[in-house]
Image (cartoon, rainbow, N blue to C red; front, side, top):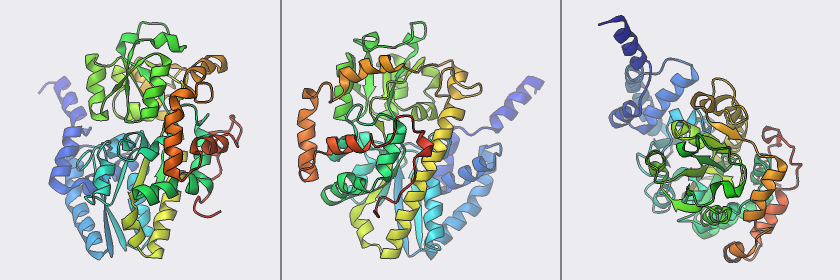
Length: 421
């Protein structure tokens, strides 16, 4: 073996591929694979298959013991996320499992089924409501295909900043406006969520083009969108063609040119290896990116009061976790600023980050905001009001989102227990 090939072998041995992770899942289960990888990442160890496979049997034994000891075992599906993606998009899923076990002294054990092993972004909520799993994590935008009330979060420019999003989800009024209708009409117990705003991420065809600043700069382009009807309306009002595409197919769609770009969040695009096919991060911040965790409300209702309280408290802790950790990730890992910090993902791939001026941003708002262009959204406002029991949910959330100054930093928003006034 030459010196170069020896170095190549050591480099290969020091990284964990998706195939390696799937081997771990197949041999030991998703929860064990998540657990050993998360602990290695936390310890800043060189992560490789050999190390994790060596630790997995002991972890599997511990997991089996925890399940046997537990009074309640819950199965959570976690769309496409793995601990590797969660290192960038900081959701708190594995931390939630640990927190609930600690708060209940092992009475509740949560089995995590991640990496699309049981459900995808589009199907996790379906499988939860069908009883296949007890809880799940996915974006509300994709879950909206099954639970249309989630569209209440998706009106373009409903939230002016990430801080305004955290303010709403901590707000006691989020119980009546969001959580209660989800619980009573759709059997969804909403626990916590990440809070980002969706930008446009242009593919490699825009690498040598001028920076996108105005809606007309993307006129006629094909933009991948989620399951949110309101997001599709907004992209159309920008002058682009909205192309619905499953998240699992988006990377290939960008590589092949099926789409010219996509709308998502910076942390999501970076976490799922979109940097190599992204040339510009256009910070239009036009509607919510909310990667939420929820339970079947019927399952939650059958738990005793102490366990319900422990789950709520753990969800409150995870809301603070993602507020703190995802904000750090955007700056220090993703590089979501102009220019990106050296060593960040966007810096590595040469992604141009287009931070819009107030006047530039106003042009996008004027095109797609219900405040400026109400007619395309009227049917959805009426539909959501009907689902909520008569409240103008859009107007109420819009008002709450503007209770704090736009200059408030997202990680400076005070945490409040939303279920107690």
